[in-house]
Length: 115
Image (cartoon, rainbow, N blue to C red; front, side):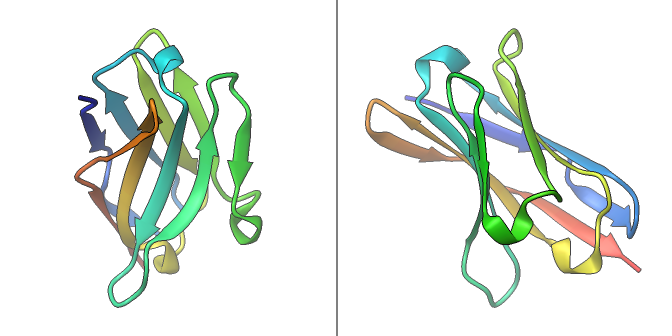
């Protein structure tokens, strides 16, 4: 069973950059897709983007250009980078893996952007 651990959240000042990590318990090439989502209080979970085994990335149209997803296969870790955080980016950020048709979610990491 795949296990995921997100990290890198916390309190960040608006305008600063933020990088979140999603460490997987299995090798990245064995995973179909790794996705990032976020959920703000009172709102539904929102898709941010994903990265395929071939390294292609896809993003929600409204968030294109704000986030960058990358990976380090040697560390079996996927990253989410936000270079210019805004208060409205405050949310719990989750990664999700699809492997052999099964979905696994991480526990989430809280991100709070202060003004």
